[in-house]
Image 1 (cartoon, each protein chain N blue to C red):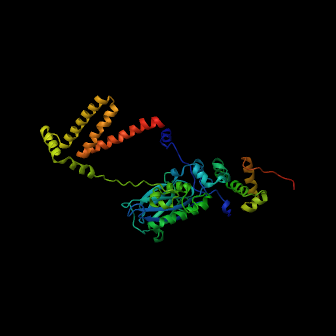
Image 2: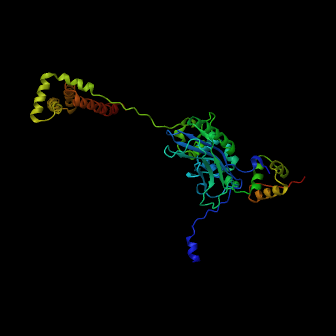
Image 3: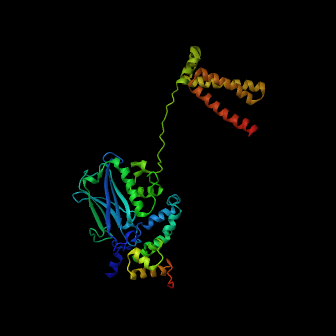
Length: 306
Length: 101
């Protein structure tokens, strides 16, 4: 039986003691409407004053906890660091508690690690009062103030000369308050955001207007032919001009014996088709022009002058 | 007993190590920064020191050069100061010499 009990014990036991210097909540604030209308951000600057700093990770041993005024646990979040630091809990609009309620924030050892939690020894409670509740517009200023306090506490530079969070400050504040970059982007030294894209709808007005150039006789002829073989008239016109183009290319090639001159000559047929029929024929001409332009640049200009 | 700002190292060593790993963060703190902290490995050692040894170390970093001065600026008793300095010397973190008066 003794052996069985031994094997049932957890394999990893964290032997962390109480913080020698105590545990403190230096500041506590609640902000609302930070990311969404009706949401809440519970922010705490704490000090879990170990001396010396233990080997155990704080995320395994200590946490911030939020309780309602009735004493019900709402949320917990592990701490990132011992010693003076910051942490927060974000509540969505549906999770949000009564504004200006006497809710409680606690910095406390995890019950799984600390079997006995005693106020002032391994737990500190702050009951929120109306003065701790701030609107969203105060968030930026209070974060900068907190950064200045931590700068002094740590002896580390967190702010630029313009009172913006530098990359060091950004790292620790984003770790404590995920999403802070979206809440108050103006307090960061470098703001990274998505590029706003404006999509433009290009109409076919010009290509459509060209269709009138064909005239009634040509349009009627193409329409009759398309009815005869039951295809759309636009397709009929497209293929008709393509056939004329091939015939013309063949004639020029037979006379000149050079495919290059044949295609250059045939291109005038396509250009005429684009002008008379508009629509897809016009699009084809534009695309071919671009392709020919690129090929001309590659093979003619570059080969001679590059 | 109030040791003032020398009472303890206020930052979790993980913060220092994080700065040390990031070139941009290290650059922001200035060239002297890591020297002041003795580097992340030294900082971790300091964080584990007994309190009196750490206070003595902080006093030495502040430029104090004699045992009496260490006792004055830190508020440690002569016995605590001696133990602190002896502990630092044993760990190779300070050199303590007796000089003829």
